[in-house]
Image (cartoon, rainbow, N blue to C red; front, side):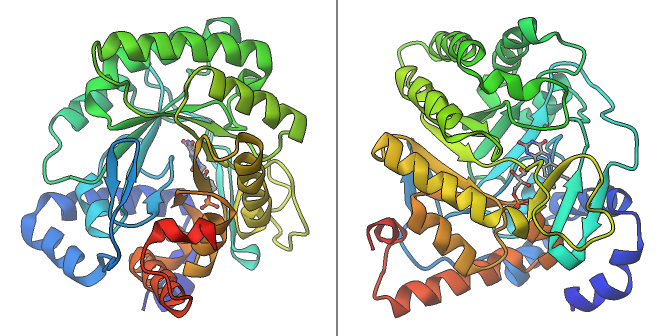
Length: 358
Ligand SMILES: Cc1cc2nc3c(=O)[nH]c(=O)nc-3n(C[C@H](O)[C@H](O)[C@H](O)COP(=O)(O)O)c2cc1C
């Protein structure tokens, strides 16, 4: 049904208008207990295998929602009812900001892809904090993705991340340092050795201050797929040195590998199927280089159970999707998890954790 609706109606409407409409509708549906229960009964994933434990958090299955869909935490109960086992909100910036001028989101259906140059439109940390404080009926882990404001100079960027942590630490179960969006000028320079060492040191000190006497909440760094192997190795060595829990691999790419859509030359980050292979390759490399010492969350081109399996086999403990959800619609998680579990049963597996050891 969603495929017909998509082909006949949704594909003809401006993608960002649909996005805002969907977030609003999901927000309303999630606040009303009967519609939330209906979403839950229609779409929630029936994960049959034991939960996955990562960083003291518990996940019903490996598939979560990637950063950028619910930037301001507007529809968490509905997203949980649609079956995601964790939700990353944000990327949020300290001050509200409008992002780049529209149009800034493009559909490339021929390529099963999107290009976006949103530029972190954000209601800011105060609004997000208020919403998360009031959140009820959400018990999946909430990750908060942190980004710097466009107006903040690179030299002051660390301060933005510290301010965000100060304000939001109480409201998230895990945090993501987003230094890999291609749409905020110079942001990706924070992935280079000197900037990153200083940023990670300050952020980890802040995390320890905020939870005195306890283990800090899990912290992840989200990386770009366009880094060289040497740059990735530098980044991984620093992540190990500073005690970061893991890496989210990957954000969108600036590459344009063999696309057919007329929108292929739009500026911005490409997501979806054309990114799948590169992100899996990076996951495999991270596992090898760190000998499995960092937790890996895989993102990039997940549409089906087979795509999830590929990332788990490469070394990811969890995965996230954005573009697959847009194209597949509300039944996305349920279908993908049921496909994954069928394949696992065929292979004689009964725990997600066994997959990487095949
Ligand atoms: C419209 C759009 C907005 C995004 N915004 C963010 C963001 O704010 N923060 C972030 O870390 N990633 C953002 N991403 C990247 C996704 O989280 C994800 O890493 C990437 O799209 C690859 O996964 P996919 O192929 O499943 O979409 C965005 C992606 C899209 C398509």
